[in-house]
Length: 209
Image (tube, rainbow, N blue to C red; front, side, top):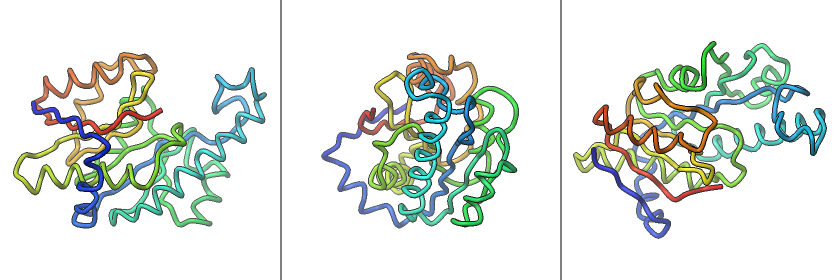
């Protein structure tokens, strides 16, 4: 496995490659229902306040994804289902494709969202620091690997809490999401180990909150 850590100062060089490779963006999102979303913030914000925050986070993430214009379209993978009123309204107002998340742990849901052929970036809605430039850099990292013959099978933006903000794949990698202790500070470390075991070349961009 070849692992690359791409520093912030190299981002401009990566961005020059962005438009050459259409990349799909998939967003995992919970509906902004009181008591269902952002439950760890309920003690501080109340159930309705946490739901309002989730609504703002989902809308912002979708806006950033659509503004990135990576050419592969944007999809919303929805919980508890795409039939929830909030997601139906988003689909009408923005044209985004909405799909229901399957049953199973986070790995199973991520696998479903990245199962279609072709390059994809998968993000959640919990990182307000994520920008269009980060999406461009992740897409470009996939393209640079393919263009040089040193295929980057997966690109990650690690998170400060030990997980990651984004995963990008040049092709489906279902095994990458197996055997991970989700919602712990071991997620990124275990994912590196999985990538190594599977022979998936991995690139990491700069850490985000």
